[in-house]
Length: 152
Image (tube, rainbow, N blue to C red):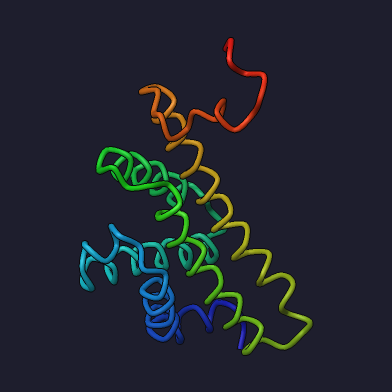
């Protein structure tokens, strides 16, 4: 069974595991969103991952990450919460690949999934930080973490 079959045939099981992992993270805004919204968000992200892997096209993942970053920033959701959703999906996909695919196929499959989600996380973070630095968000004022920055 290749990566494409795993993603298509095991989509629901992957989604259920990702939802459970996200639930265990106890993220304030995700818990407030409720189970239906969590499922819809993760299902959308998983669908984009599958689409990107099959088409070898990252454009929809990048567009989605930028839109999510903007929406979550405007809603006051911390970047770490949004990144966690990507991370739990990546972990579940990696475990599924390692469990299901023969060893010779694992490296390419892990690389494909890692590239798609890594690109999404990178764009998500860059968009979020870009928005945050335009509004001078105090939570990103790192000067307090270093001595000698009093005059900055």
